Length: 168
Length: 157
Length: 276
Image: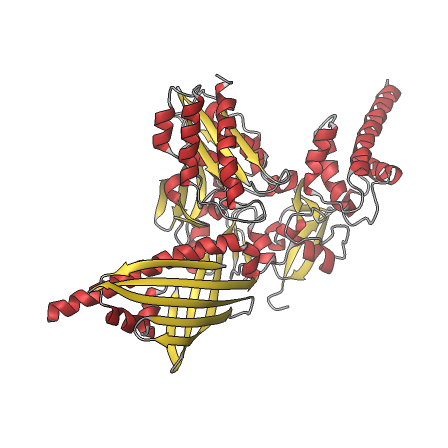
């Protein structure tokens, strides 16, 4: 495509050089140029949430963010959260409770749910449903996804208690 | 989608008839019209730019006269598309002129139009509002130009 | 040259827009990039306003008035303590825009510049008698939001002008509320109502029922002192219905919207009168 240029993006803690149009979306650059394919292209209109990634630690839509506007900022995709304890807890409970069916929405669900759990000590079911309202799932009917987040919160607080007891 | 309206012009029917058949004058009255020219006896070409919030659409239109009874009726069909072919429009239009009293012409118009492609996504509801406001703008300019012309004639008479 | 530029000052952004008439300013991108993806808009360049520090933050001025920077995301507006009393409805509206993630991106300046007739901010800002701070090649000007909103998606913004802030009068003590009816949480409103108590009367603005929010100042004056009179409230609602010019769309028919207005307005008035 015409108009490509070289620019640097900081992605998952690494400096990456990309050759793309600066008005390509962050999602396009992540998937097509950097082969980071956790974020999915669903609606490309910001509605489905499958492309959710973190920009300077804040969840945003990859499809509504222009890559050229991300220079000098920190982009984190689900791949970059592989060692994050909250993400790991969510992944485990998603598997156990059956919150994953086709898997298309899962990456976006995890990035959004992780932000909720990181910022809210004990989210209620209502909090979880509200937080995930911008992430569409066409398989599960959401019940199991909400269950998974609830279970992850319990597991994380249990882990915290265990850690505190071990220290004492 | 159907739209209709009517408006009076303080000019004799013959003058209004002349005006609606004058592509140059119509181009100056249609909002966003940058060019209008006659192709042959019964067809015209026009370029119209419509701004809709952040969206700008440039249409290449062809107007074909299907029936005309001078100086009282024109039935026409408009077809066109954006330069990028991103959307297409078509409409059938009827315009009638009557002169309820000398020097006052009543213009009645109706149009049935469809729009498809990228602008179709915006929904016909909003398109209708846009067409309504454009037609109001047209009526004001058209009436003003004709009345101006009529007065100028009187001035020279 | 790059298709995306990120100036660090308003002057720099405006100078670029003046030099490049086909460039577009971009705030959060939530609506603009969605339209770009749908090939509804084109631009030679996108001028990101994200790095302009002066457009950030919500501040209370010496005279008690409050200014919300153009680039303040909905998330921050929804959590701002300065917006209390009769400005509280602005927080409520901000918190109901789209969803958690989009509220991190979208900004008040972007929403006001885009001027979607169903946008949540418009009725609360009209109800609050907000002024839009516009900066362009000719400098800065303040315009009452009712004069700023011209027609469907049409504003008083001139080429190369950007919305740099929203100026709000000092917060009054009266309660205020934003009521939104939408098909699903996070959707654009089918009808929305902003209502603020003002002495013994109310200010009311109705969203998504015309090119700009409906406001009936004369009817508001007539209603003052009679908030507990159902007949007076009904007459007030009728005055707003008479101003409405709703569209038929996927969110509801025009007729349905007209039916909703009196019910939602009456409910909003009850909210701010504590059921007098």
